[in-house]
Image 1: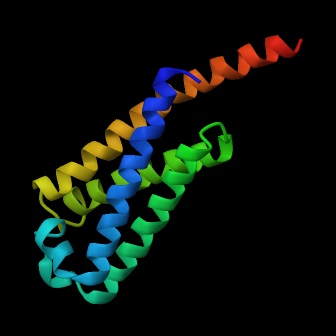
Image 2: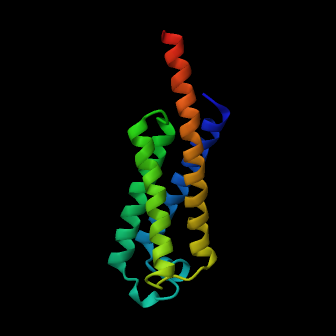
Amino acid sequence: MSRFLNVLRSWLVMVSVIAAGNTLQSFRDHGFLSEKLYTASPGLVNGLQARTFGVWTLLSSVIRCLCAIDIRNRTLYYITLFTFFLALVHFLSEVFIYHTAALTIGVMAPLMVASFSIMGMLIGLQYLEVEALSQNKKKN
């Protein structure tokens, strides 16, 4: 396996662990979301919304961790890539369409993580393709 794919796997595990921590925060105290993310409309954040956000974040965390474990699984790889696109679109829409979040560090961090992850996973696809081609040549 290439060095890049190993770095990508480590990145996915790190992002997954951080997401799991954010999940715990969302379940423990919904004020976390109104203070860090949805600062433009904190009154819209309630316990139900925080728990829903927590479940969504936990699901993303599990998917990303599973991809790190089995990075050659194409279906899982594309689902993981989609979780980052979904996060990027979510946070951008909250800032620019719904105006419930401001461009604070609490929003910029997930935007940067999603963007870097998308770039890394798109580059990783090239490495996976080269790896698959070289294995096919060895079989023939």
